[in-house]
Length: 123
Image 1 (cartoon, rainbow, N blue to C red):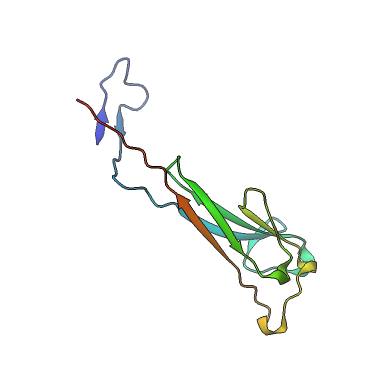
Image 2: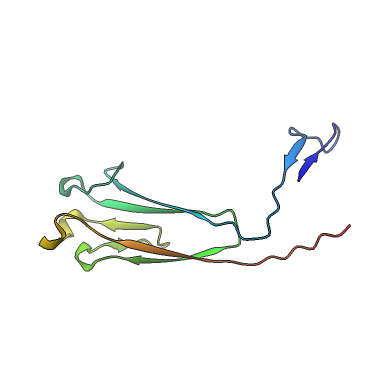
């Protein structure tokens, strides 16, 4: 739907606005990144201090909430932030088993709780 306003009281800076109308909930976008010493990386070095895994959930459905469930191995001794969007790892506390061959495996499950809003359009 495109709304176009003529110059005048309602014209404002932008005279045209595009509104997308959808019948379903829009799927959120989820990204994870690893930072150590304020640098994004895919590796953790013991001598660079605490490593942080950041989880970013971008959801245009403002009423939705998200349940986050981290699956972290015990050998990480990791701490999860109160909002569950960050995991803090002290490399000196990691006791990586030999069979891992230097690799750390972890996962996160994000469930979206959808709040349905029904709008009635009247003429």
